Length: 424
Image (cartoon, rainbow, N blue to C red; front, side, top):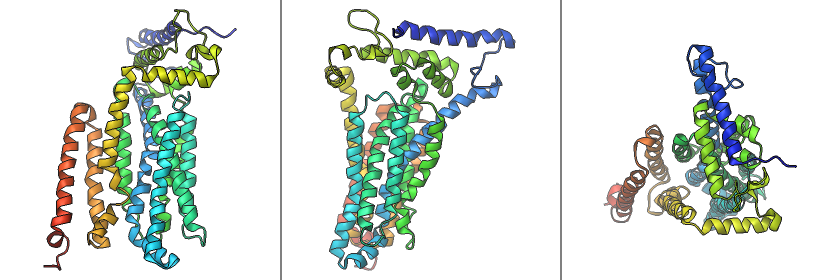
């Protein structure tokens, strides 16, 4: 018979663990136990260990996912060097431009496909292993990108590599965001998720430095060399506590809580997981009878196949405003971010060249577009919780719109005086 595991059982286990810790006050002269017995040595400085481990994992997720935005900015910066090689290879500038357009766009197609695949597997109870697989796909794609100068097949290998790196990035961006929302304590979730944007801005800036004439083909895949370090951290770290609870591995889930959080955060985190499961009809059936663990989260299994249950679950989610409203807001915000910001990452240098600016000045202009963005996002991360989310969305967006209008006017009406001193 499977073990009966209800929400009350989960809370009893958490409370018992917490009581055992707080009972250690008497043994140490009234001092609070700062770490679990099987995690630290009991020294006061060990209270930082779970938080440090959590931040290391969070940084590794960002480095292996959003930092790869540098793969987009690097192709923008490499246009002057790549154009020379492609013209020699194809014999005409038109065919060279067409081939480079495929190189640039292949990653965008991969990201779109990867995000779609991540949406389909969003109910996967594990976060760690899909994330590791996505990192491996991105790494393989980056290595293939470096083979662009291989005779006959170089362009094909590069396009395939760009698509694979985009596929891995699309998966990692979605799965990584989910894991970052599940491993920290509740009050640090916003900061951890904001670190992804910081990694994206830093990666975008880093890609603009990789522009040596002799090694431009290596720069196409150079950013993926950070992935092995991210993989090493993820291999040593446990999975998301929420994912482990969904799998019915309650002991492993509590070990994950010990790894990522201090003891005083266990009960709030566990309550958050329990409330979510109750809302999703995971923990308790409609008739009030406790389900069996780990099968309580799939009460429709006995009525039909898993695919039928997944469809019914998605219909239930989209039938309530508690899920649809945040989804619409998030979709609008991310769409605005992509249209307002990321759209120019791969083409800003080309856009500046199209209005008559030299290649060197175009590269510098792209750099000065990325530098304040990276600096601002990095500084804001340390005071992220000091501002309301609404203000952080509204005021920077208005400022970005004003700057965009000024740039468009300058390029279209003032290019002779601003960017071409020899004219006039």
